[in-house]
Amino acid sequence: MGNVLTIFRREFLSFFATPVAYVFILIFLMLSGVFSFYIGNLYERGQADLLPFFNFHPWLYLFLVPAIAMRSWSEERKSGTIELLMTLPVSIFEIMLGKFLAAWLVLGLSLALTFPLWLTVNYLGSPDNGIIVAAYLGSWLMAGAFLAIGICMSALTKSQVVAFILAVVVCFIFVLSGSSIVLDAFTGWLSPLLLDTLASLSFLTHFESMAKGVIALDDVGYFVIVIGIWLYAGLLAVEQKKAE
Image (cartoon, rainbow, N blue to C red; front, side):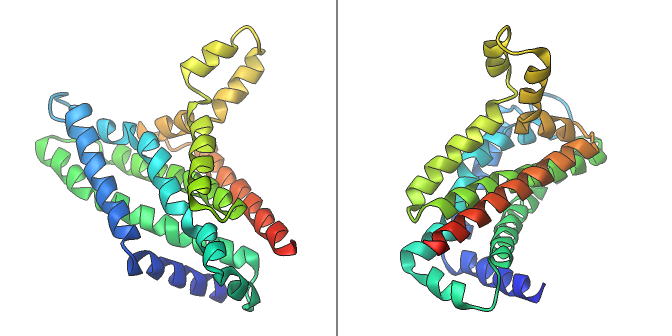
């Protein structure tokens, strides 16, 4: 655990040693405000909730999270520091976990800094704060799933641009898999069971339930499993590159 904390501290501080974290947080806060107030019509709806804010999170994460994840392994390879990292008395698992937790905390800080929106709806009305807490939890878990995919893609290549594009494509598939557009396209081709399975793979399906205040074990478990699978895939990719 000590090694994980060391890697975590190194990675977390590295985000703030460069403009990466500051730029990410600024863009996230700006886009969240624009989407909530101007596109989501937070005021005009006349309802004291944050649904317009959370509804856009999957689409914000689709591009912003791969942007912060693409440097995790690609930069290590490009700069040559991965060789030094591999000589340290730490396992690849510990490095992977430390990198993930550091970036996930940055995402958590970005979410936490949106608290003025929460204060605003409480000032304007009497929202169900339990639903808002559940939505924040769901958003953070979903961000972790996006991040795990991004880190895995970063482990496959030393090009940050390629890692970003791959992550966006894979994440886009996970976002859209449960949409009516995709499901309607496969209706008649797949059995109802396979259609339900396809829909269950979508980030939207599980996040929308939590955004409405329903914290179900299967939704939480889904995001945890997705995070675990993609981090393990990234670990295998790093080990394969190391063997080469």
